[in-house]
Image 1: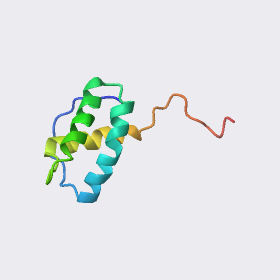
Image 2: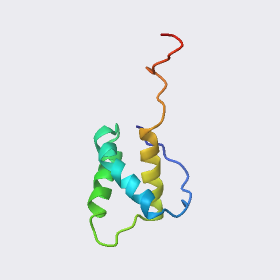
Image 3: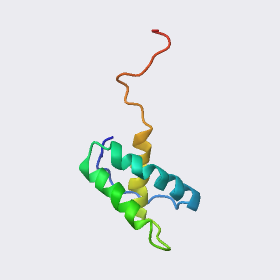
Image 4: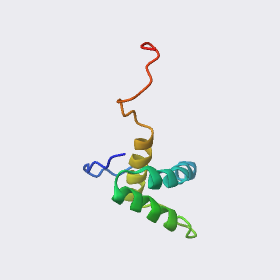
Length: 85
């Protein structure tokens, strides 16, 4: 995973199911992140989400979406290619 600083864009509002999905992947982000900052952010979010009525801020939501998307991006290096097998 990598953290790339991008110009902040206001994310679209999240549904409760999307927030649940993002929170489901936060422990994996915390464990698999190459960046100490991203791991700390994920752990912080996991702590905050236990509060009653908590919802991520627009900036937190955008970062959560980005970090979870990074879990599923193709690294391109050692991928299995069935054509070459």
